[in-house]
Length: 287
Ligand SMILES: NC(=O)c1ccc[n+]([C@@H]2O[C@H](COP(=O)([O-])OP(=O)(O)OC[C@H]3O[C@@H](n4cnc5c(N)ncnc54)[C@H](OP(=O)(O)O)[C@@H]3O)[C@@H](O)[C@H]2O)c1
Image 1: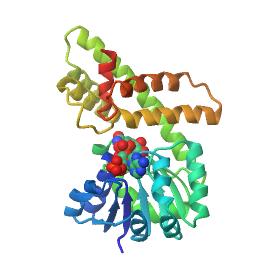
Image 2: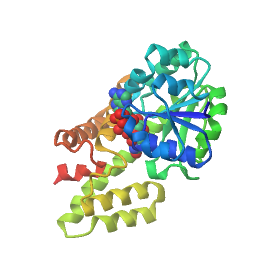
Image 3: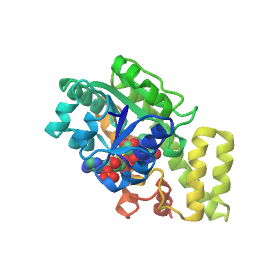
C-alpha cells in the first residue's frame, strides 16, 4: 500500500508525482499512456497495472488529467468506481464550478470523500512556498490530503464546504491571467515591429510582478528562441480553460464577451496546428 496515488502524468501530473516522491511519500502512479510513468518508476514510484489498481493502492487519490470527462472515463470503470469507496479523491484537473458540483455528487454517491482543487501555477512553479492550490469541498478530505497538498504548494487555501468555490476562484484568477497573456502576445508584435527583443521585455515584467511575470518571462524566451515544442502549458490546455470560461458564463448567466474573444483566438491557434505547442505559439497567429 502506498500513501498517495497520482492518476494522470501529463506535464502537470508528472511534476506532482515527482515532487511527492522527492518529499518522501510512497507514490503509486497510473497514466493512459503508460510509457510516461517510466522516469517516475526509476525514481521509486509504483506503476499500477490498471486505473482500478491505482485507486486501490492508496488512501488518497489525486487525479490530474486534461478535463473532468477524462477523469470520468478513467474512474468510471466498474472496478475503479467500487475502489473509490472510503478513499479521499482529490480532483486537481481544471473544471467549471458546475463540473465540480457534479463531480462531488458523483464521488459521494460512490462513497469517496471529495475535495476539489485548482492549481494556480505552471509545472515548474510547483512545490514552492509561493505556489497556490485553491481547495473546497469536504473538510475531512482536506485534512487527510493536506500533507500531500502542502508538499505541492506552500499556499493551499481551503475555501470551505461549498465545492465549487475553488473552481470559481481559479477561473477568476485565470481570466485575469489570460487577459495579461493575450495582451503580452500583442506586446510581442509591438516589440517585433520595432526590432526589440521579446525575452528582454518578459524579464522586465518578471522584475515588476514576480509570479505572473515568471510566466511572461518564460513565454518571452519561447518566442525569442522559437522553442514552442517543449511546452509547460500547451495552447490546447489553455483552449480547454477558455471553454470553461464560456461554460461558467453560461452556468452563472454573466456576460461572455471576454471568454468569447479568448476562445476565438485560442481556437485559431489550435486550427493552425499549434495545439500541442507552448501557449506562446499564439504569437504565430498574430503574425
Ligand atoms: N500545465 C499547466 O500549466 C497547468 C496549470 C494549472 C492547471 N493545469 C491543469 O492540470 C490538468 C493536467 O494538465 P497537463 O498540463 O498535465 O496536461 P493536459 O494535456 O491538460 O493533460 C494531460 C493528461 O490528461 C490525460 N488524458 C487526456 N485525455 C484523456 C482521456 N481521454 N482519457 C484518459 N486520460 C486522458 C493524458 O493522458 P495521456 O498521457 O495518455 O495522453 C495526460 O495524463 C489540466 O486540467 C490542466 O488544466 C495545468
